[in-house]
Each structure stands twice: as C-alpha cells, then as structure tokens.
Length: 303
Ligand SMILES: [Zn+2]
Ligand SMILES: [Zn+2]
Image 1: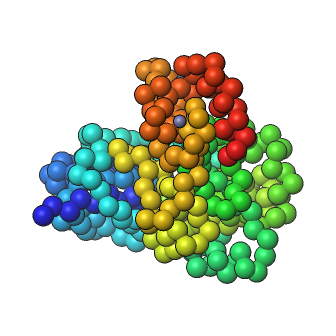
Image 2: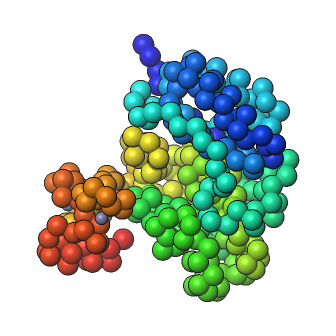
C-alpha cells in the first residue's frame, strides 16, 4: 500500500547561489516523483512537498546533506496522493512576501531581531502565568476556519497588507503586552515578529513550528480551535475527529470549514461556503444575490 505524505519546511539561512539550489532541488524532486512548491531566495528556503513516503524521506535526507539545511525542522502531515497539481521550484526576492525585503536581516542562525521562539509546551506555561494576546500572522480566510482562542485577526487579505496594518496604529495598545504570533508552519512569524519588534512592540513571541507543530502536540485538546488552512489541494486539515467548526458559510451562516474560490474566474478571493452554497460562492464584490449580501454581513458579525 502506498502511503502519501506532505511535508512543510523552511530555513532562514544565507544562500550564496539560490539559482544553483533551485536546479538541485528541481532535479532531486523530479527524480523522486515529488510535487509541491519550493521557494528559494538569498535568505533561505520555504517549501511544501508531497508524494510517496519513501520518496519524501529520501528527499529530506538528501536536502539535509546541505549544511545550510541540516537542522531544518520538518512538519509532516497525511497526504492524499494528489495534493499538488505540479512541481514548482522558484527563486524569489522574498521567501514570504511581506513587501519588505530590505528590512529583513538573515544570518546563519536565522532572522535577526525576531520574536522569542516559544514551543507549544512553553506557550501553555506562558498562558498559565500571564495575560497573552494571540496575533494571527495569516490572511483572514485562513483564520476564518481556525484560530487560537481569543486571537486577534488582523484585516489582511494578503501577507503584503501586514506592514500597512501594523503602521495603522490599530494595535498600538498592545505594544507593552505579551504577544504570541502564529502562522501555519512558523515562517511568516519569523518576519512578522521582527517587523513588530522593529515597530516598538516590546514582548513578542513566535510559536515555533506554527500551528502545524502545535497541532501535532495538542491536537484539538488545547488552545487551538478549528481547521488548519493549507496551501495545497487538501485546502484544510483537522488535527482530530473532534475538531470544532468555527467557519460560517458566506451565504447562510451555517457552520462549515470548507473554503471555496470565488465563482468569478478572475477573482482570487476565497470564502467559507457550506455544501449547499459551494457552487455560487462569491466574495463581497462578486456576490450572486442581494439576499446573500445582507445575510453575509450577518454571518460576518457572528464570526
Ligand atoms: Zn450556506
Ligand atoms: Zn470575487
């Protein structure tokens, strides 16, 4: 029986020749029949790759032979065997697109000036000992189906919106609070926490390994509520059979963790949709009915 796996990984580490790394990674993945998306920059690597378990293990073993990636943490999850339509390996200016490439400093130990790394266990200790504000480092659609209890979800449709959001002053009252940033696998928080500290937030932690690692440790029996949005054909994953459903259908407001693309083909927005309303999924701009628009405002107020 074939067992399919998906792995999520990143490393912030200076790479002298990202193009050489790209060629090596592409050839390696092709030779093993793996698909997925790998981004490489002068600051490191950010990838998610899926395929047969043995092939994924060989891929990781070979990748870790490169000294820059030897200690790279890997987050594993169950795949379906068709989680990625193709293999994409690219060189980019930024590993994660905050639109602030020049404010990021990376050395051999990672991002310079980022938030204090905190493990899932240490997070529970911190929450038990002090008031903690969770700050979601993802986009609003990801948070619509899963987030940490009581988390602040910034009004962000795209990671590039974070800088303006932080500069808006909307979160200045948190500058002396203990803040824990979190994202899918941790990479966005490496940058986000550094941007926050740079803007005067005094006590910023970043959840090490992100929600993926937290879910492996605590599943749905801790501080996490809902489903984890993922950037592959699975769209979302649950950590257990008893994951709560916190998403609300854009149209009728009923509970759903299903995310659908807007029905307008050129639109890149996504909405939460129940099984009855998937076909007519429409973002605020491309709603298919007037009724939907008025009910949607009600549905948003619920979330
Ligand atoms: Zn519905
Ligand atoms: Zn739309």
